[in-house]
Length: 213
Image (cartoon, rainbow, N blue to C red; front, side, top):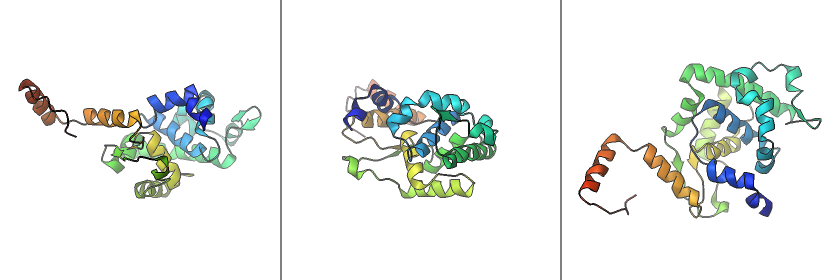
């Protein structure tokens, strides 16, 4: 564990990416693939192989991956070994095809993902790592919908990991400095024009109370 928390790549990932809301379809697909890969690799291993993943999977362009042939799929190797198990690789190709269908139906994979939380990240407030669940009812709901659409290797545990890393849920511990930063970013981005007007008026009147939520 000590290696994990002192590795510069992991620390950068935690501080700058994990838990930040993602709306780019390729990025979301990449994070879904990484969440699936956690069954076979650690986050540390994935991060150190990230450039390899991106190169082999054509920068996670679903339209490109959907065209992968069996020969192409079985050529996705690192040091002579398949990047992931064959079932996982086949699932990624199949999921790329399903993402294309979702883009046609919802306009983007992002629209599809974020509609489950009404476009705003869920916010948990866990104090200890042991309190963080492996899955939730919301993850089970999304997992069920994905599987009904033909996605593979998207059980609720995979989906919840995806929700965490993509910022669909804020699962930083409340003692982590990123917990409040992520919450603040969300409040800023989702602040209504009316609330912005009220804030401007309050400042003009010299209201300095900052204790409200």
